[in-house]
Each structure stands twice: as C-alpha cells, then as structure tokens.
Amino acid sequence: MAPGTPSLNGKELLAAVLFISSVFVLGLKLMNPTPLVIWYTGEDYIIQTERIGDIYSATDVIVLIVASLFLCGSGLYLLLYEQIHPATVPLTQGAPPVPLQETQAFSPLEERKRRWENVLPTLKEDQQLIYQTILDADGMIPQSDIVEKTGLSKSNVSRSLDMLESMGFIEKRRRGMGNLILLK
Image (tube, rainbow, N blue to C red; front, top):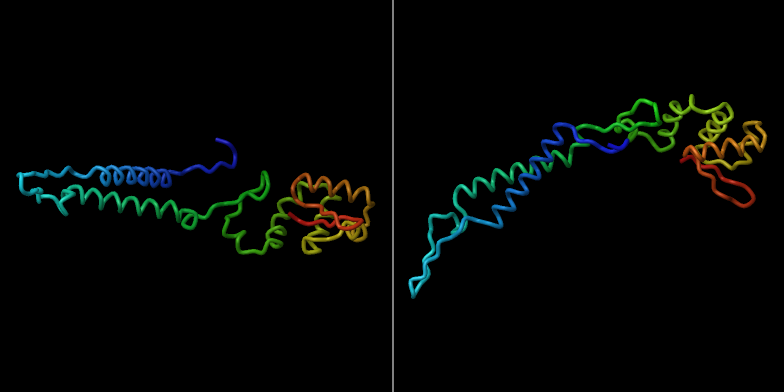
C-alpha cells in the first residue's frame, strides 16, 4: 500500500462488509420479491393472500427490516468514524503525528507556528532565521524586509527562500520590483 493511503482497521472493515452485504440483500429482496400466485378463473383474478401486502412474505419483511438496520448502522458508523476516532496528521516526515482535533483548534498561522517546532531542527541556520522572520510577520513579508530584519545578504536570503519554497514551506509572489513571501 502506498504511503499516505488510508487503510481500514478491523471495525471499519466489518462495518464496510456489513454495509455492502446489506445493500446486496436489500437489492435482491426488493427487486425479486416472493412470487405471487395469481389465478385467472375466466371471469376474475384471484391473488393468494397469505403474503403481507400481497407481495412479500413475513420472512421477506423480517429480512428487509434486519438488512435495513444493518445498512443504517454500518453506514452511520462509516460516515461518523472520523468523529468517533479522530485521525492524526503527520506534520513533517519523521515527526510524531498530532491528533487532528488539536490542529483544528488553531488558526492557520498558529498551526504553522506549531509545525515550526518540528521543522526547525531540519533547517539550516539561515533558513531557520528567515522562516522565523516570516512567522513573526504573520506569514507575509516582502523579501526586501527579510534582508533588513535578518542582516543576511540578498544572495543568502534568495538562496534560502528558494530552498524553503522547494521544501513547500513558503510561496513567492511577484510584487512590482520585488517578491512577497507567504507561508504555505
């Protein structure tokens, strides 16, 4: 299985099997009810009345009710599984996953600041200083301001920004004669 591909655990797999089986049973029963016996006496039609509603037998009705209950129960479980069992989100490669509920309680900038703690050890000194400067500017800053605030040369800033962009941490947008740097 490819990395990042969701896999089913035992309960999800059981719910999925029950759901599919229930759909199959309901489909079979609804499309193929118990056959009716209709007699034509030459003047009138006679339909056997030992069936419920003249179509389904009592066994058919019980099977339909049980299959419907399984269908609803397993469908709701599959639908609400993420709320019952919160997923985890890996922040970076090698970093421990953080429960999804924890990341949802924060604004995007606060979430990036939390990720920064895990990303920090993987970056070089200049990259760390530049990324921290962008964070301190609330995630958006002109490239020229980074040069001023960090004291690094334009070429070092440009090279480090290129690396951060290739790593997927920032985005450069052209603004007039310079670039606007945004956190992703």
